[in-house]
Amino acid sequence: MKEEIISKFTNAELLIDDSAYEKIVQQENSIQIVDSLIKDMSNSDDEFFVLTASYVDNYLQKNLINYQPQNFDSDDENGTMHQNQVSNIKMPQSKLIDVPLDFHVIQDASKKSYTNGEIKDFSAYFNSRFQKIKAMLIKKPNLRDSYPIKDVGVRDDVVNVIGMVNDIRNTKNNHKIMEVEDETGYITVLIHNENHSLFEMAETIVKDEVIGVIGSKKGGLVIASELIHPSVPRIEEKQMDFSAVFISDIHIGSSTFQEDAFKKFVKWINGDFGDEVQQNIANDVRYMVVAGDVVDGIGVYPHQEEELTIKNIYEQYEEAARLLGDINDVKIIIAPGNHDACRLAEPQPAIPEHYASDLYKLKNAEFVSNPSLVSLDGFKTLIYHGRSFDDLAMTINGLSHQNSDLIMRELIEKRHLAPIYGERTPLASEFEDHLVIEEIPDIFHTGHVHINSYKKHKGIHMINSGTFQSQTEFQKIYNIVPTCGDVPVLNKGSLKILKFT
Ligand code: D5M
Ligand code: FE
Ligand code: ZN
Image (cartoon, rainbow, N blue to C red):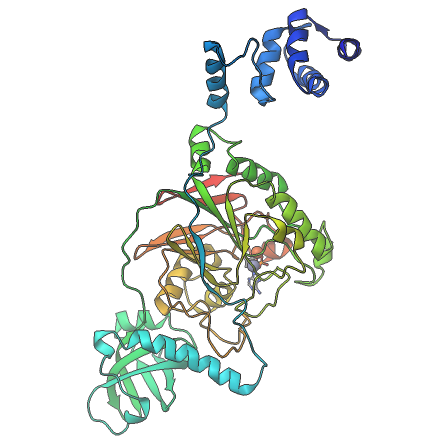
């Protein structure tokens, strides 16, 4: 072996002294180390001719290769000192590893989702939405005395009803006209533009949401004085002693997937990348949530194949398993998006094992529906990819892909993840509406728009996790500038964005 080592150095026109040689042969994988040392020395700007023991020492420490300091033995005080040196370079991996994970799924539509597409399902679906949200509204003091819409015509007192918005539009004189319906009938509601605050609120009302209406009768119209969302009370914030990472829209298989940034991110989460502060954050990470668009998929939009580096859906998920498989000691929760190999209609069941068998083999991965509600050490996390953002950005003035925090706030106030039926978001006409926000989450995690956002609304952390895909041709046309490789981490209750580009 001595000859082999010496000749490798000679061939590389490098000299090695005896102490350096002794140090190298103490290592288990000494031949491999010689190869990488030679590479390292050739890349170095230093003008040196003789490889010394201290250079080898530095190199081994820097690269953490089975670092075995000379004269190391457990009785030697120096031995302990050397071990500390190593751990100063690589931060200890805690991940609160001794504390068992408390993960469970609270709501998942994967197995509950049945439909045979008949008309009666359609009305069952809307009835489910109406009843669930009505049950929230009726608890509000102002709506406790609400009555069926059919009684509006026969009663003389104030109008006080709960209904679903059939239609809302501006009149010629720039007031708003809204048709509201329950299972007994419908009314036409006028929102006068001189009632500024009410008119402003009405600007955010969309078709198919469920609201409370208080007003007075005038001819065949109801003049609104108050419009009421189901909304949420301010929640009490819990003490968080761990970190959770939120990502989405990785788009593996696309030529615009930023693999280098993603690999840096994986190194960071494993505690092998970043400065001391960043590594300390990584050490607290117990959960990573992926809110859809894991892969770019196949046939999602016209001529997609021209922008794919992996043109086979199975291979895209195999690559995803390779990349995510490098993540240690973190529970990974994966929900689908509109690019995944899944039914498109929401609720989307979990990514099928059939397409992603290697991902399913990862011991630390869990697969859930879109949307779903999970508990991360007691923190209720609502995961939704965010397809409905396209519809809300198009419908409500002032909302756009850039400010998805405002969209998330609207959805929470409306207690529905995709209120508008029949636009770009395909909704399955189930017997039950799984997109009603029944339980109030601590964390609301979305993706899809490819632009980070964060805001706390009534104590709820609302996070949009951006993307690992750089700007696509489609996004250029719509002037969507993605925040690529910026990862939000909820670190012990406060949000940090780490950049990996
Ligand atoms: O969505 C990527 C980005 O493109 C995201 O910002 C939403 C936007 N997008 C996608 N589809 C549409 C439609 N149909 N209208 C408007 N904006 C859209 P991704 O799901 O990754 O393709
Ligand atoms: Fe996406
Ligand atoms: Zn998407």
